[in-house]
Image 1 (spheres, helix red, strand yellow):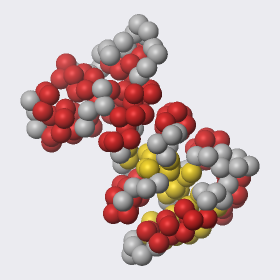
Image 2 (cartoon, helix red, strand yellow; image 1 turned 90 degrees about the horizontal axis):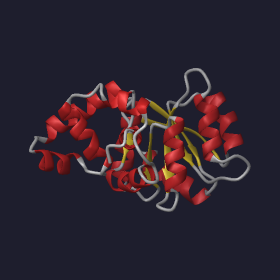
Image 3 (cartoon, rainbow, N blue to C red; image 1 turned 135 degrees about the vertical axis):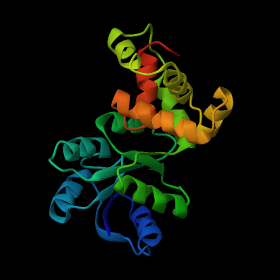
Amino acid sequence: MIRLVIVDDDAMVRTGLRLILGGEPDLELAGEAEDGRQAMRVIADLRPDVVLMDIRMPVQDGLATVELLLARPDPPRILVLTTFDADDMVLRALRLGADGFLLKDTPPPKMIEAVRAVARGEPVLSPDVARRVIAAATTGRGPGLPDARQELARLTERECEVAVEVARGGSNAEIAERLHMSVATVKANITRIFAKLGTENRVQVAMKVRDAGLL
């Protein structure tokens, strides 16, 4: 059973999420909060496995709440809820260590599977939204930084090629086509890239590729 807490200042959003997630036999809606400060109390009391976290909220926003939660021992998995006009805030949430993000209008089956994936420890980053966030993450940086170049040097030549394609916003299928690989091989390469670079999602890979000056 996966215990969930929903954190969003919009009562209609919370109601919609309850309707989407509440009927699943392996998901338990343990509680809700309407701002970050209330969320800290609710999460401390209920100790959920996964928190669905809005970013823009009164009293204490989602970014501050994510940072405080992840500073605690044994924090919950955090799945950020966002809209298309919050790319910079999503990027900051991922830098803090959030486990992934979803658009609030994600189709219910995909949202349910995303919650399950995050609970399993798998990062969730929608390909469509990832392109926008990666674009925001990889602009405005000059020549490569020595530390980033050293990190990328841990990769094999093929892994480095895949990492660059990830930073360009390619989906697994697109990368497979460009590099003449199977999708399964792309996935295997990305898994190794995450492990070697200490990253948890494609945006973090993109930022390291950018910092290494490979874009």
